[in-house]
Length: 180
Image (cartoon, rainbow, N blue to C red):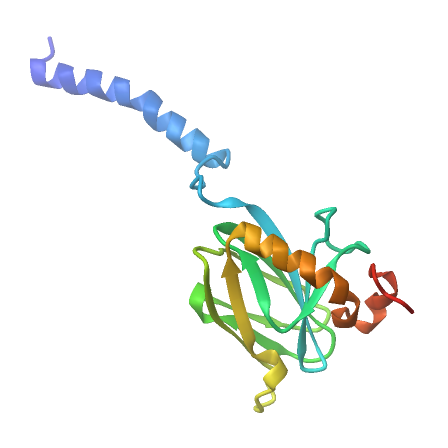
């Protein structure tokens, strides 16, 4: 016969087990993300000729299609969103650094690299980069602008008209708004 204390501990564990199992399964199923974090955004950043060419998915939500939006140097992101960066280089080794988000990566020619993070609250911070040659290149230093989702969408819409000018030279032909 079990003592009363041991019996009550046993019953408490039996009641707690389904709760713990539910929490573990919910986390593994992806439900563990705080509700304030929106579903992800993938952005492609390519270093070429001492510049950051930044590509956002267009209205179809996919990268690599004619409606993609291109910008230079400054990275805009919606607040409270899971971010996936695809980092590329066409010519040199580049350092890419977002100190505010503790993201540091190297862009290597022909070797896709990446980084993931949550954008967090709206704010402005530094985007730092260099070409690893020992000289600072002004066009590799920009801003990280994290803004409310509706402000980000307005900004992205405004960039569509200028997108072709910021696209990589071999990508311009396919960009909407390009006038050959």
